[in-house]
Image 1 (spheres, one colour):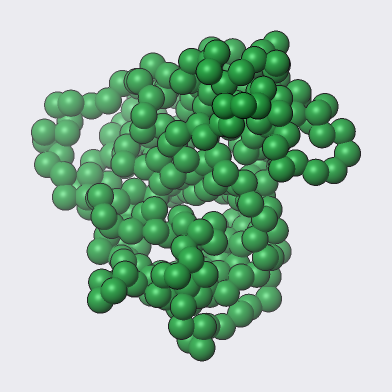
Image 2 (image 1 turned 90 degrees about the horizontal axis):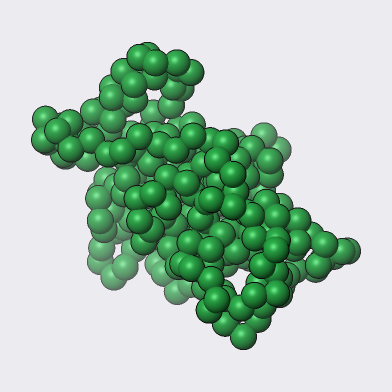
Length: 285
């Protein structure tokens, strides 16, 4: 954990919140990467975090996950008792079959049955005895997402999980992630560089700039065209302006539209994960 424990406080858990952060600071030497961050995330809420490279997005996610050992800092964190962290690469164990990758570290009753159900949710239950090396990259990432969600985490942290995927696989994975989140109902914090990805996945979008949260905007897209496209364009332009992007140039190179949310899971790719169980209310340093 981070140092400077004498500067910390602890708070009782708010049952309506999945995450509550107060006065979070993280430093690397003389550089302050996170500067007095305050943030609440409700249970079941999908939040996307945008920011330029080096803005502290991954540092913030690692702080929530309890993965920032020996980093200078202060503040307080409230996180759920179970969470999963999803990374850009699958991180499957090559010497274990798919079902054994999903059950790795899993405890409780009917472990294999739960793993098979998780593989079915991502369209790979018929490949449960395959080795990771026999799968495509997208299929490996689906297994990793099954491994993350088989534990029914209350919080899913995703650190640029789609960045290494081709455009078509990324769109399909968006649809899978939406469907799985509707089923499992975790709170989600997605770190991404992709403004369009954030708009089409999240209910709320944050921008982290020079260690501070400078934008917090709700996403409520209408169900039908052309109102949906107009609202998407409005939010996109607003976010790009706050990210320092030339919006006229960006408008000329708009990304492809998102996939529909009901594509079959056997057509979709997913992400990688590492799962851990932190304390229910954890000091931030």
